[in-house]
Image 1 (cartoon, rainbow, N blue to C red):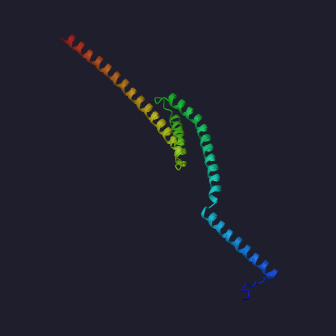
Image 2 (cartoon, rainbow, N blue to C red):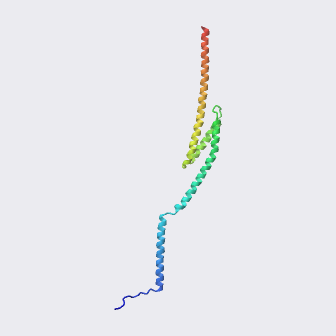
Image 3 (tube, helix red, strand yellow):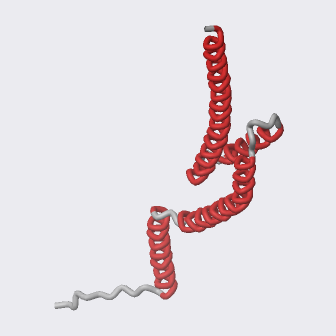
Length: 169
């Protein structure tokens, strides 16, 4: 019986070529799998989150600056409405107050996309109602005074008529 084990000898160049081939296939397979994992989990969201957080912080700082600026405007408007006398015929005062109220409302209208700015709409509505109520209250008071004077005149006229009747009898 013969030994059936025959050995095939592979020369050195074939072994090196095979190793390079296996290494290239391994590197290509690993690269392909890594690309599939990374492409499925888009890494751009990591950087976009940072950008969105930075944009949000800038918007918050901008909103705080607008708030701080409008504290002085609100104080000025409060003082003007409190000092406003509708009995004095000063149209410029009324127009100035109305202009400031409209400027506050404009802050909301320019930034409708941001829900925080709705406070400026509410502030302008409040000042508009206060200003209108102040004018309405003045007109009611003026009408009451006018009616009281008319009532007093009527009472005096009635008393005179009664006196004249008594004197004529």
